[in-house]
Length: 364
View 1: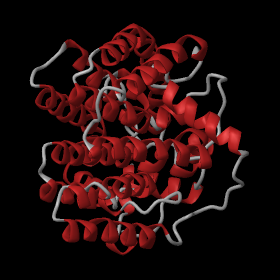
View 2: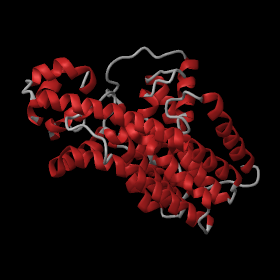
View 3: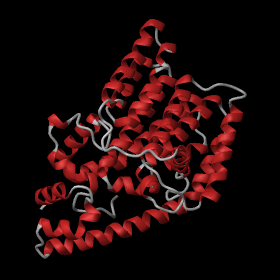
View 4: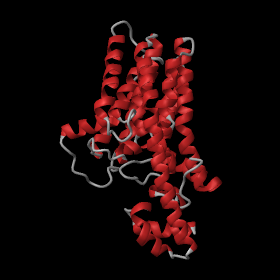
């Protein structure tokens, strides 16, 4: 983030200069994201594009810190395998998202979910209502996790009052989702959706899912280890529900985005926050049950994969540097916004040429 970055807005960042309150609930690619829009608009007004990108970079690190603190409290002490949280929830595997500030709406949802789970696991359900409710404003991904978590409240609050939470959350979720489907898509075959969901999971060890025959075995062993740990105990209900909600996000991504194991980094690169989410909740469950072996396996696998992430991040940084150099040469040559859009449109904003030109005029 410090060494690489575009001076011009990138992809969805072109929307930031034209935010209006009346558009707060207008769907964005099938999602209603009023909370991230408000946060990004405030950051953009206060500190420009750099502030939004810094927040997109910082949100996963904060989530990792909250999760590691929750694990220590659940277990009673810090263990070396807690390194898995920063390796999962931040770092070089997030290279793309940290260069695209609009992906803050992914990281913000995960941060809120981790805070909610931490509060519920430590029997503070009334405080947890706030981050669960805020998740509802973070798109379909937030709706799924919020709905799943809401069903923990009847068992942590007074039974009658507790059922009001899932009733309210589900009602708001339905209202926010209705009519927000966006562009109609032809859903792929079910097996392709499941394959995409699986590849999202594999991307925590290889962001481009290029080496899946090597990265799949440790993740399968981790899942089997979690299943074996359940034979000896049960984690807090909130952690189980959060894990199921986060896995549902993988399925939702598979429904809307399809990719194979060809090395294309686009989909797994955009969704690293959501790829990490179920693993983080599973690690918290293992901490609550004091089962270290599966967590240690995952932490070790992430450490082994770290050089791959660093190499991938350096390649992405080099690509960003080339685009930055070319665009700055064009700007110094007094290219018009229309000329910039013609030459760099496929890189900067391939979906809406009119938006791109307006944004370039504002930026220049």
